[in-house]
Length: 78
Image (cartoon, rainbow, N blue to C red; front, side):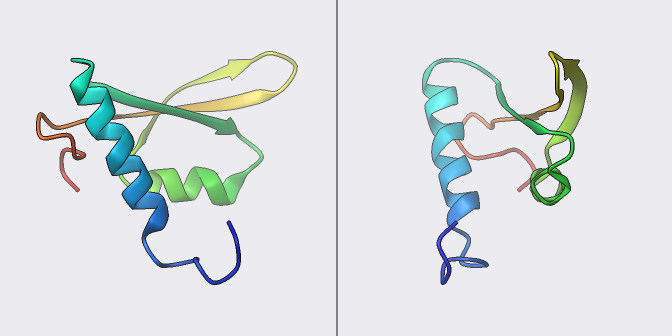
């Protein structure tokens, strides 16, 4: 992220926007992945209430995260 935007809530805003699109498509889960070695990003997703659903191996190890989107398009429990 560009310097000056850290801590502004922009990431959470973008993920809420994605949750609204997920709800519009009648889906209930928002899913994300990242390299398991990217501990800062994994911690960030977990701080937003995402749970690690599984690990995937394809030459790299990926953390697969998911969180339920509420019917109003925001994240449940946020």
